[in-house]
Image (tube, rainbow, N blue to C red; front, top):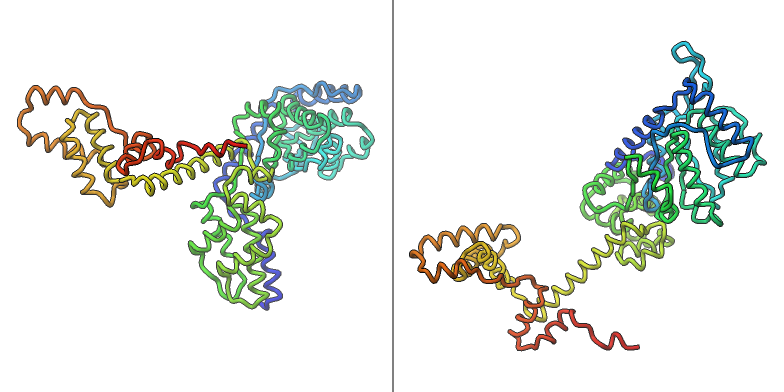
Amino acid sequence: MPVHLRLHCVQRIPRDFFWPLSRHLELQQSLSRLIRDGYVGRNPLTPNYAFRARRDAYELIMQGSTNGYPVNTPTSAGFALVGISGIGKSSSLLRILQMYPQVILHRKYRGQDMPAPYQIVWLKMDCPHDGSIRGLCLNFLLAVDSLVGTKYYKKNVTKNPDELLPLMAQAAAVHCLGVLVIDEIQNLQEAKDDRAAQMLNFFVQLVNTIGLPVILVGTYKALPALNGEFRNARRNSGQGDATWHHFKKDDEWTWLLQGLWKYQWTDKKVELSDEFIDVMYDESQGISDIAIKLFMLTQWRALDKEIDSITPELIRSVARDRLTLIRPALEALRSGKKKQIQKFADIYDSVSIDDYLDRIEAEQRQAERLEVIRTELGYDVTEQTVTEVSAWLVDAGVDMATAIKAAEEVTQAHLHELDQVDLHKEALKVALAIQKKKAAPDKLSAKRQRQSPKAMPSEPTDLRVIVTQGKKKKMPAYESLKIAGYIKNPIEFLG
């Protein structure tokens, strides 16, 4: 194809590319169970559902009350799908929903006429940008009208939220709605007064009264709004909430790029290498939507500049020039620093990421401290390995002299593979061999074996080890601990 047509072909990627991952399979299974379980106890031919539900809904509508809804035994609940912006929550959920027919027309069932011939299997809609309950109800009624040809919206467009909520519940009950998906639920954060709490309480009542499963989808910004009653209701579902973080640089990330790499329209196709995997992750920070857009932009530039194929350098150049608006967020993720990530609510999960970042920061501090101890205090890996292994042997009942000898022998034999060998096991074998060669122990040595001395510290961050290493360099304990970072400089606390 000529270049001007291939430029359009690149645009196919966001529309055509979908690569199933483990998280998609888990979501599909949860949704399948949810829809089917939600229909248990909602047979439209039973008197309870066909008559009582409609009568109660009619009375509630006439009274304009929101204190109750058509009573039915709930058999299902719902769950929340929360994740970082751009990770594919909405698009993945929509693809899974499209596996099911959205509307089914029922004429008769076992010779009986169906009271409501149109069954709506699923309905997906966005939460209004201002968190308005009235806007949500009207959008729902309008969506139902477009699917089954009713006139709910036209007849009730002037009503207030207290009147619209029962109508919404009645429409869901009459048309046997299988699952209701509310996307962009983080918009509840923009709601005034207590609208967010009211809307979440309404979702809980839909779950508890007509057994309608409700799935809420949003970014991490929605977490504060979900900490109320809806969370308590979801706990009964058994489905568990789904939290989609950005990808780690593992096999699943490589698998995703392998699928994406098939969509190349440059003159020459390049194979996916470790360098490409690293560059794509570094520039997208494991966010699939950014990775896809970056791949597209890189190909457009290559075609426009008549470059034969994409290269890691070209990817970095495009990321630097074309991802300027999201660069601060990517830089925050790349830094791993909590204070920077907290500035971006859509990529920050205050519940789970806190622990992750704290662990990363602790590991970084530990690594820095170890490096200082090794360089400034002369931490000897061989010496400390001998100390640790001999202490373990002494605890196992081996006399001190034999333990030290066995530990030294094993450490020297495996000096270049200390992390790959079970030193304790090998040292025990050597110690037993040494003991066999010795003469029968006298009473004193036997007594010493029974009185195993205390194990010597061996961890490089152990205060006793730090002090001991400092003494070898004729340094006082205070100075050694200060160098290792355990004693802070008093000047830091002034002012």
